[in-house]
Length: 105
Image 1 (cartoon, rainbow, N blue to C red):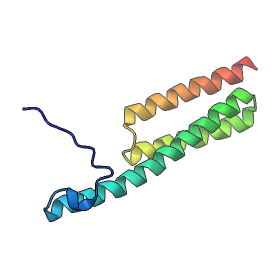
Image 2 (image 1 turned 180 degrees about the vertical axis):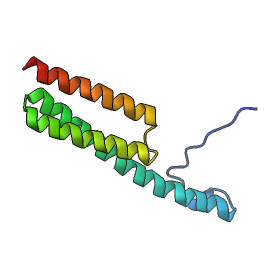
Image 3 (image 1 turned 120 degrees about the vertical axis):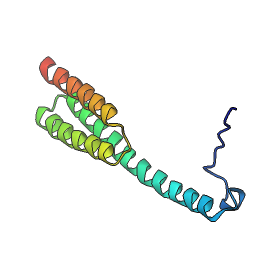
């Protein structure tokens, strides 16, 4: 039997399950979603700043931004927003970009 996935993101709480636990799970999922979005946004911003600094040629600024991005990625992995292997991959690719930009100067 095939499962059907329903987008419950914007449905009012009354239209969901009638059980108390279903409504609670819905409320919890909304809270988690907001928290995860905040962590993901912070991580993306930190990565972008590191890449921009590396491509601009500011070595000290790039290394500082790289450390901050690395920490943000680690936090996201620790909180479960990113898988640990995805976090390792992102850090590796970011390090390659920063090192490549530093070497070309």
